[in-house]
Image 1 (tube, rainbow, N blue to C red):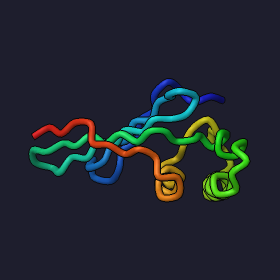
Image 2: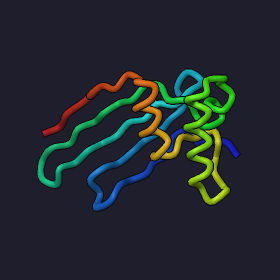
Image 3: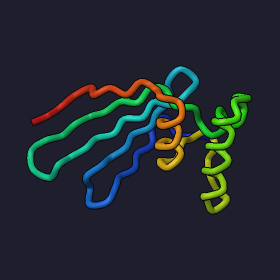
Image 4: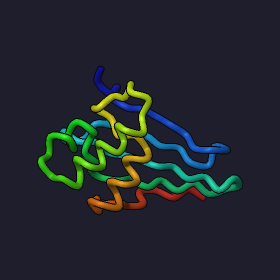
Length: 105
């Protein structure tokens, strides 16, 4: 199974939305934060290794992060993707480029 071109997920109460897409053989994540009244912030995170990419990287930190994500899953997880919990841990470990791309008021 391979990841679709774009996948979406949303957080509790609709305050956070996440969009993940393929980008240069890795993943690009965009998060959209809505404060419930008038403000929407789009944050882009470049680039995140997929689970398969992390497992094949040879970097023990990335391998451990991917294995932790696989351990948390119910056994049926697409390794070409990056689950939200893995993405958060990856950001903390790898320090990818995080930029605010747009802000709507």
